[in-house]
Image (cartoon, rainbow, N blue to C red):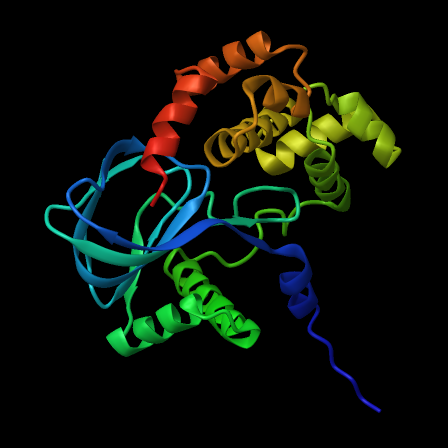
Length: 272
């Protein structure tokens, strides 16, 4: 017996997380507009008819029928509609084993043409209550993501070249996310010295453990503020802050506005 295995297959199925934060079939008009949008999730738009627009610092695109668009998390842009626009939208989070945004390096819009017949089929699957049709729609979402991954030339996880110790550290941070988490705690869990871990972590990721952890914490805070009704105090507690005022101060230092102001602005802009 001769069996050849591809370990990449299991890795892709088991380690790449794809979740939907929101979705809908929207018929829009001129009231669809927002400025300086920067979301903790990426947007996928299947355009059925009409026109819309999106503009970042370096790019301008027209959202037109017969195309699928990707607006990545972390990119700041405006969007608007001047007449009418119908779209099927999905707010997605694609994360790596360590909790990092898989599209973290994407700093531009992406798109590909898709036939009106295919978009109608996706919409039919979306509106169906049938379980099998739901799986077929899921397959189209995953196909769209593969097209965008290819356009951004992503060829693996950011942690593919990490040493076993650093990779384990990123996973530990993701599972135990808290502002109280210290390098000493992580090192102890891995049974290695703190000095060795901090040195290797900085060399391989390009940032300190503290900065890496802060990035995940505030990304999680963004998501909770934009996609849940949790109180500021509850979010502060979940992320390990000593009180909501310290959380608000740190959040403002990071984003230039208070958590409440961020929530109001982003929720108003992220409905579609």
